[in-house]
Length: 386
Ligand code: FES
View 1 (tube, rainbow, N blue to C red):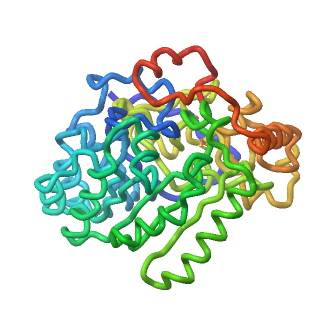
View 2: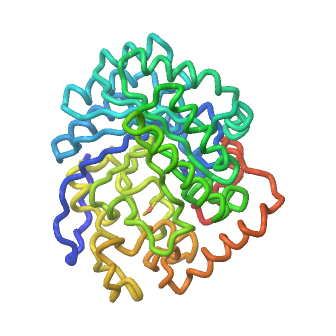
View 3: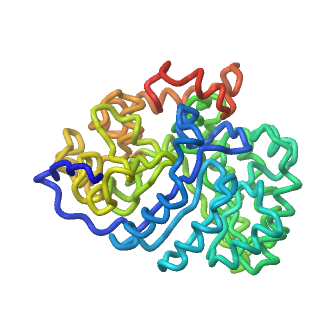
């Protein structure tokens, strides 16, 4: 049954369509990455609560009808779902451009052939590092050789090689080796994405935040490689928020382009919005994508700039960054309508400066928390849900 939609905010102009649909098919994952962006309480969603194949087909149809064109298939590890090929085939039939975001675990010769036949357009393969030791340590698995094999399969099946490596204090000094590995594996694109500090990365922030000197050295190395590689490989270097003085326009604006559907069908404007207090997010089992996108309170609350308070409200740059990230504002200030503390004009900016100063002073001696269902259940309800 379709629930009655919430009233749209009077101040917000009607947004464009949800061009980018991210289907988080499952939170199940064979890896245990210390910087995982899945919510810390992910284990509260059981496999039985995941959307069915038919549910996903309906979500795809409704999203396509609402104007979605790009589909990201992620998780967890989306290859854990044995209906992935069917979901890809339906998305392809509907006209989506389909992207698989994977650790490579489970991407066998037969599955990649089936995905190709189903019409999969694009595969992004993640690595944790260029060394077996750090790759396997950070994911708490033995997957380094497997990932290299999968890289070969991706090339052999005619896909462009798109690699993603999350950077942080424990691997950023290896950036030259990471790029060299990508080059050796025939990567055409590499995303060197400094960790942003949400979810598991936020729990491990004291151990993962790099120093400014590390970051600057990594940028220099990346630039030197760009000159060396020319057109052979494109390198995207994403700077961590904490080392900037203006926030990012998170998700390109709240409810502006991105629509995430979590494994249990909750529709969100970003991966972690569910933690925000006082907001009920709709579920695709109960409400259509059209109604969720245009009429739900969850998607309208932080659209545009009508919700802002000072310093954002009167800031000449407010349209550029839209006040930054609502989740980061909430995690650090407990107020989701506050300016993102990354901004040097935020009254809470000292919280970012303190974290950076701590990184400069050296790593705090405390164990890393690996993403793991047991840890997730233990941590659920004991914190403010970053
Ligand atoms: Fe939620 Fe930025 S991650 S608004």
